[in-house]
Amino acid sequence: MREWFDQIPDRRRIGAVKWDVKENELPMWVADMDFAAAPAIRAALENRVAHGVFGYSDLPAAWNDAYVAWWRRRHGLEMDPDALIFTTGVIPAISTAVRKLTTPAEKAVVLTPVYNIFFNSIVNNGRVPVEVPLLYANGRYEIDFPALEAALADPQVSLLIFCNPHNPVGRIWTRAELAAVGELCKKHGVTVISDEIHCDITLPGTGYVPFAAAGETCAAISVTCLSPGKCFNLAGLGSAAVYVPDPFLRHKMWRALNTDEVAEPNAFAVEATLAAFNESEDWVNEMNAYVAESRRFAEDYIREKIPALVPVHGEATYLMWIDCAAVTDDAADFCRRLREETGLFLNAGNVYGKTGETFVRLNLATSRKNVEDGMDRLRRFVNA
Image 1 (cartoon, one colour):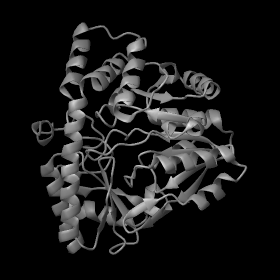
Image 2: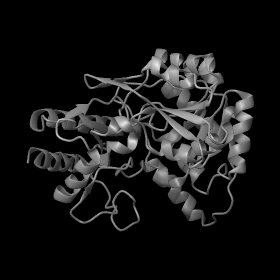
Image 3: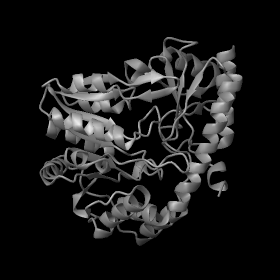
Image 4: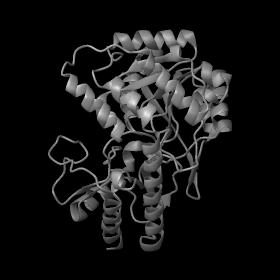
């Protein structure tokens, strides 16, 4: 139903991080949808509010069952419900994993350009990030396996923080690629934290392979971070999970999440998750179709009207990664001037690692009207 996405709510003056901007500015930066949540989710939350009491909440078995059914139905992964642990967010879980599964001054590998908060989770906890740049050619990214193995072979490296699908470049890794990553990590004694929060935002007809589904090795050495937050636009409700098939690794994560006090749901987290996974699949399919249309429009627009830029075709996420090397060698300066002169607010690629210095990231999860406006502002700035 297109009207779910064409008619977006006014998010100014309600404390929305994304829309805390000047009146003439168009924010297409942080990974946050402008779409109202699915009707079933809103109804579930309204019913919960009507009850009027918001005390401590427990975690029912229905929460585990909802995750299991969704990943079985959508992604072909048969999860053990007891291998799921509630947590308040993917980033709290990653930071907890960094503290629990590594020691101070040890190293964590990231494949760059990658979600910038991975660096925060590493550095803020006294560990050292190691960048392994992805290979970029002809508008597509691949894993540099020789470089990855060289990094993993360092005895100080104990963790790989992996992004599947990959933010910001939009790659869905193949089963063979995931299996190869898993074998290299096992060979060198490295644990994998797989952030799969964007997994349900894919081009229609395109699926993703969970890291834990790529083989027994991958399942045994990994902690997978899951959440309805991105796909259903529920990030502000604090609802996520880690899936840990190996019982010894699971116990470590369970103990660590509880020690950090990020393993208990609030009064709305469970209700929203159940309504999302059990009742809102049609909404997700419609959202993916809508975002795919906007992606096609934006890619065609850039190729035809802003030929100095190169859109990297994404298979997943609602984000677009744009190569601006022909017009700038400093994406931060490019984005600063773009915002000052046109009001268009994008993410500079610099924050995603050294290889992002000539790229920008654009968020397509808004109305088609806003996407068209954003493209026009980008065209006027670049062509000027």
